[in-house]
Image: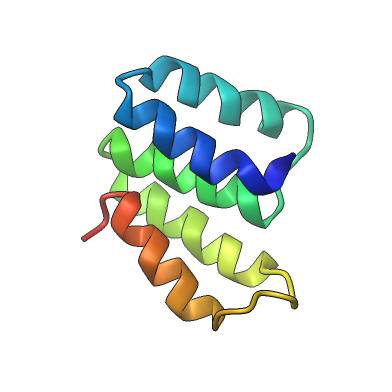
Length: 88
């Protein structure tokens, strides 16, 4: 369920469970999951832990990996997510 990764990650951070959020994303990356949704979740982890340059890079990689079926223009979607990754 990679599509839920960004939302689960953000929710865990908002609940004060940063370690669990980081472990969730790390587990997916360790298994070789590095698609669009996992990259956004990684950006959340990086942004919320103060690693903004890494978060921007993860969002850029997510933009490059974006699914063709996004209903919103990918740039607008990612800009909205950047706010949650604390990049603004």
